[in-house]
Length: 186
Image (cartoon, rainbow, N blue to C red; front, top):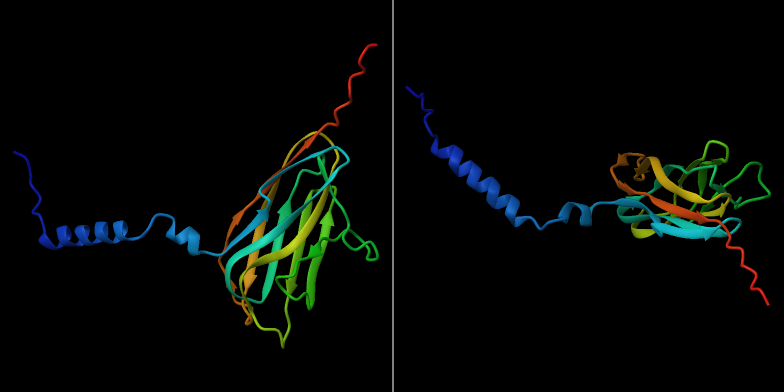
């Protein structure tokens, strides 16, 4: 004989409410409203020896006061162009989103393909809300291939140093070999 479990009316009501709630939330609502840190443009193409610039953008942020980003790239294919040749090492350029009152880290490890960048505003600056460019990176193509530009880690914080979550979206740069024109016989 089959054993039947009693049905509970409140379970059906709860399930109906859950389904109604899920259907009432527009698709993509959480992603559209959340803070994102992205590589912009998401993809680029250059030839060996040519340069391209990508922006690290923060989108839909509220009360941003400090940011730390760690990126990776393929060092066999790309090289970062130094934004501050007067300072030892290789650096990227701070963008206009945050006032770079305190730069905790700005270093590129060309051999490992790593970028470490951390800045914070200091009083009397107000926290930043909205979207904008956090950093600017100029790459030069070294060899043909496609390199991902990925986020290894991102930490955004408010004026009190409290971190808050953000999604990330990396990018890619395709390096093509220079085309050599074929001689036309005469």
